Image (cartoon, rainbow, N blue to C red; front, side, top):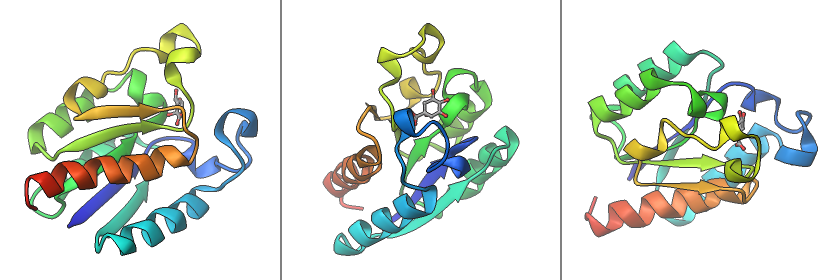
Length: 147
Ligand code: DQA
């Protein structure tokens, strides 16, 4: 099984960025965590981060035929990006949306996700464990489909 982990803007600053909300682990720490967990599942992972909406759209487009599933933390694009939503719809790759913080307990503008309606589901509020839960969510979903 091949899975793509997509990370949106400012997640490259994890570790130093608002640690009270997002924790002290860096994105590289989380990538290592995911790759060691995925190895137990015999699953291949590509981890990708971009601050640029169009680059994320292009990455999703190119994922078609290569990746069986995706896990996305769209970061601020969660709340604004019709382009990322349309890209997921276009490629039809099963996708799970994740967030470190609980977006439903924060500012009003964070409570709406344009991405979640085109995903299998959303995991929000478990810190870096949201990434692990996202891995298991997509893994279990695809395993039932025998991929
Ligand atoms: C986030 C939540 C978003 O609202 C915010 O813009 C982020 C991070 C999270 O993981 O909690 O950048 O996606």
